Length: 321
Figure 1: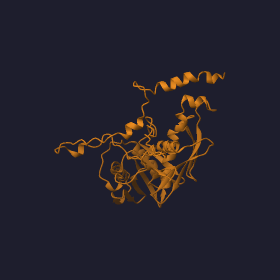
Figure 2: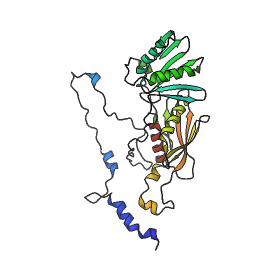
Figure 3: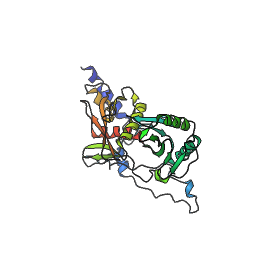
Figure 4: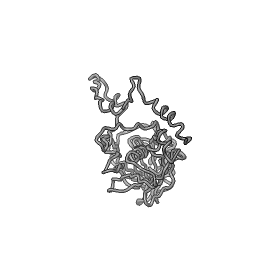
């Protein structure tokens, strides 16, 4: 008798033991989602100070309706704690692509703007014009600017002269902001905030899932390149193998959700007795001056289902939020 099959009854018993409920049937979580009802909103007193209250746990808009091809409802898979979130980083960091370079500061533009003005004044750059609505300071030496970064709560700071970045100026700005904290005093810069603008979102086009990003291609590539280098470093789970700024592509090694969720019975009857990772290409494409899409393309002979594609893109897009 095959030694693997000898243990099949035991494997099946263990696999099913955790699925049963006391009353003897398998609990289908899809029913919980389908039968869920919206509770009435909490009403606060009219005398409250509206500045002190906001959503403590805002719920993001879902991409799609979780409707499977067979017409049945499918509960979305929960995401592991920490998955798809950028790792701890410095308050100020450099980004480069080709000859372009800028800084990413871990504070919103309204906080960064007065600090940028302080920098220009303290360095005696001679401010010729200052426009807070556009986040631009013109000086005799260079043009300083700040705008919303790709991720919420981030700002991009530039120092250009004739359209080209000034290295010495960026070095000085990096040291200047590095000595500051994220709790510096804030001022209004409404035109720079993207609270009312669309942000990146997961979308389905036909059978393909992709991420729509309302930002320029090069900015998106530079930020994603940095975040993948920080997060995709887990051997045999998720790794960044190649990064190509010319084609705006990345080659990664990733263990898909289908592979991670293989149960003991599937493993027993499979030629692969251990979980396997596979190679996938992440491709950024421009669809306009301020519109980029991110695709996940299978680069191996292993299966890559729409569910796998969606789960991977959810993780990757989380690095840019």
